[in-house]
Image (tube, rainbow, N blue to C red; front, side, top):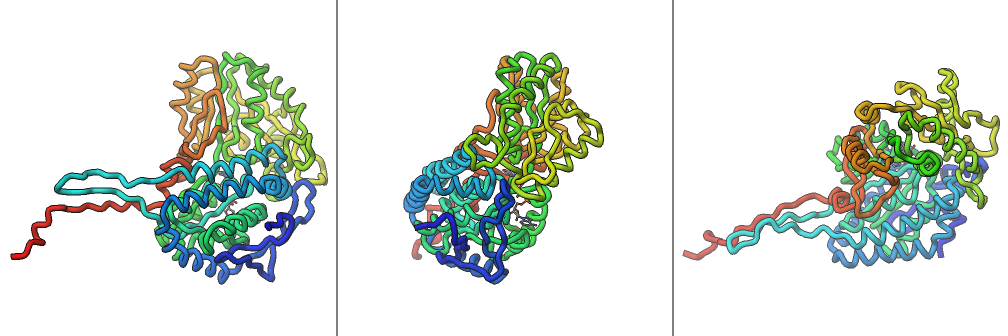
Amino acid sequence: MIDFDRDYQMIIDGELVGTPDTLEVTNPASKESIARVPNATKELLESAVGAARAAFPAWSRRPLVERQHMLTQIAEAMERHAEQFMALLTREQGKPRAGAEWEVLGSATWFREIAKQSLDDEILEDTDQRRVITRFSPLGVVGAITPWNFPILLAVWKIAPALLTGNTIVVKPSPFTPLCTLKLGELCNSILPPGVMNVVTGGDDLGKWMTAHPDIDKIAFTGHTETGKHVMRSAAATLKRVTLELGGNDPAIVLPDVNPQAIAPLLFWAAFQNNGQFCNATKRIYVHEKIYDEVLKALVDFSRTIKVGNGAEADTHLGPIQNLPQYQKVLEYIDDCKQHRYRFAVGGEVEKNPKGWFIPVTLVDNPPDESRIVAEEPFGPIVPLLKWRDEQDVIDRANKSRYGLGASVWGKDLVAVERIGAQLQSGTVWINEIHQYSPHQAFGGHKESGIGCENSLHGLMEYTNWKTITMNKRVGFGAKR
Ligand code: NAD
């Protein structure tokens, strides 16, 4: 029986492990302490990596169907515990019920769908003379390092493909949101053999130790672009494989032929889903000048129907900012807008001494392209609306970013939206829809938004080494004289 309300312990070699030193976890809606979690030492990381290493040979040799079956069992167990996961996710992350449901049930779906995937041998030649195949063999021990915005889903995006392809794993959640990952670890360990999946908790240093660890073969990382660069630098010492899912500054381009009233709710959720704490949140909304004023007004009107509050209350649409440093960062963007006298179409005023880390929905009316709010990733509920007139110019403005994670285009003219979409430099381009993900669809960033991808067979391959085996079947040197 997993108790979701207490006993937050690490999982090392199938055992629950605590530490005398612990880290506090707080509820961002109330600032109250909700739990304490272990603060792993280097020695405990050593044990986790050692356990994963020891479990690797047997796990990687197990028939694929058995690994697939266990992932499906995990999906079923997650669904059985969905209510508990959702409540805990709201408590530690802050997101309201709808977002928690999307994340928890989505995570179960990911396990189930990834379990259907396989990387078959590629047969390049098979004649009487020769046989040439490329096989995908597991890497060994994977280290997964995850952020606080989608703590369960982004861990599952790493755990499921790593285990399916025959690797073992050590997972480190963000110190701000470790609770659901620890419970996921317990749940997976009731199904998996000991050592196959280990969960360790601690601060950023624990992540650094993992990236430097000689016995970890790959780091699967989601987080800030700057952190991703540290990860890559550190991983270079042992030539670890890396997948880096990093920051974004996604543009949305809105054509003049859309209905402002109809598009406003879609644009609102594109930008404010998860309170803007979303790598793929729309962070720049470019609206054609012909409909700019109407779209802005419709967005402001819609935002007035949105309740920001404690995610545990049924009528809340947007929760708090997840943690104090992020709250302070968002305040900096609001202050910067004030100092430059950019106009807030809505929001911009933050309560002094709030009960939780709440920030009102804030829309900035046409600030300059070089402003911080346009050029950087605020990662909160503050979004600029920008005017455009010329198609090529807006494409150039959208692409003028070091990021290239996602983008969207909205319009009735399907030829125009496709033409514009094709020129946007990003890993995903959504046209007349947004935030549609699938376990079978490659997801990753261009430019400084990342390296490699997650999901799909391309994502699976990132957990393997290619091994090409060539065989000459005419063994002339084998005959006895
Ligand atoms: P972060 O980079 O601060 O932390 C992410 C994880 O890395 C945490 O577990 C942290 O403890 C660990 N860490 C910190 N320093 C480390 C180091 N030097 N070496 C190894 N590990 C280290 O990111 P965050 O604030 O938790 O998340 C927000 C960021 O994540 C945003 O930039 C967002 O766009 C990005 N993100 C990207 C995606 C994507 O798929 N591309 C998805 C979600 C979030």
